[in-house]
Length: 100
Image (cartoon, rainbow, N blue to C red):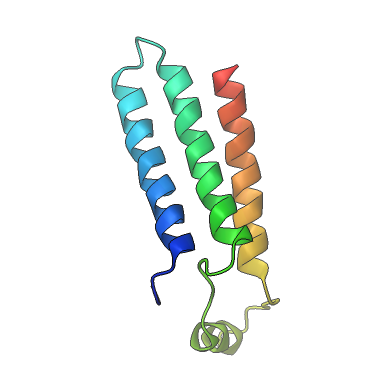
C-alpha cells in the first residue's frame, strides 16, 4: 500500500462510500434505486480520477515494475494512471446514464 497520503485517503474514502451506496442502492431498488446506483458509480469514478490525477496517489514501486518487466509484460511508465482514468470515464458515463 505504501505511505498514506491525503490523496490516498480521499480516493479510498470515495471508493468505500461509492461501494456502500451501491449496496444500499441495490437494497432499496424499489424506491429510486437506479438513481442511487448512479450516484455510487459517480463516486467510484471520482475516486479513480482523484487517485490518478492528484499527486501522491497509488503508484507502482520500482520493485513492482521490475517484476512486471521480468515476467515479459510490456510496461509503459504511467500506464496505471491511464487505466485508472479510462475506468473513471466508463464509471462516469454509467453513472450519468443511470441518474438521467
